[in-house]
Length: 86
Image (tube, rainbow, N blue to C red; front, side, top):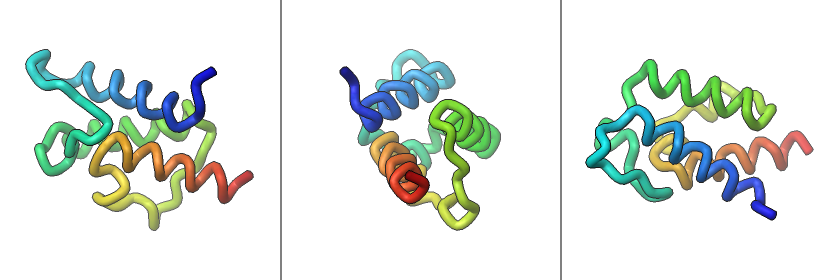
């Protein structure tokens, strides 16, 4: 059975990969913002998808570039929110 972190990672890799050129490989460590792989609209769509898919509300203070820098960072953010809620 897949753990929550792995589910987040795989889901977000698929979501981000759909928006990119086929020549760009997205891994859990790919610097999404530094390489400008997501624009502001795509980032907001990603946040909405996270909130819906994982039944979390991401607090405004957590909407930082650091928390969305990579798929690994996003997974860590969702894990922290789930732990705080649970």
